[in-house]
Length: 121
Image 1 (cartoon, one colour):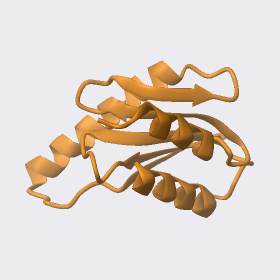
Image 2 (cartoon, rainbow, N blue to C red):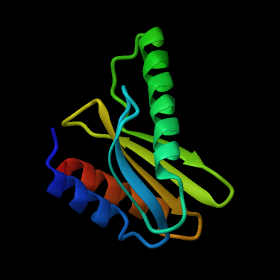
Image 3 (tube, rainbow, N blue to C red):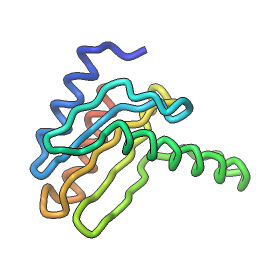
Image 4 (cartoon, rainbow, N blue to C red):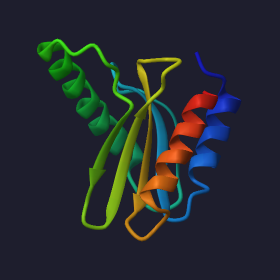
């Protein structure tokens, strides 16, 4: 299990991105949020639970297709936000989730930050 200090540091690091709205670390099998933080009014618990269902569905589809690879990122673009889901390689039941405003940090910067934070967990 991940240490609370590492999780708190991960949230602070991800939310340091310009335009970040909310972030969490979630167990996709149970939908349980292990850690979360927000910078704006945003229902991170609901968003995290919904994204756990997205990851579950993708995992089931990959299994049905006989795909052996692992999910690295799932990107969801909305008209005014970008949502990034990144699985945590050291603990494949977990993912890191970030919601960021469309005018915030570039997608490349956000993905690089997510990768860096994920590797530290």
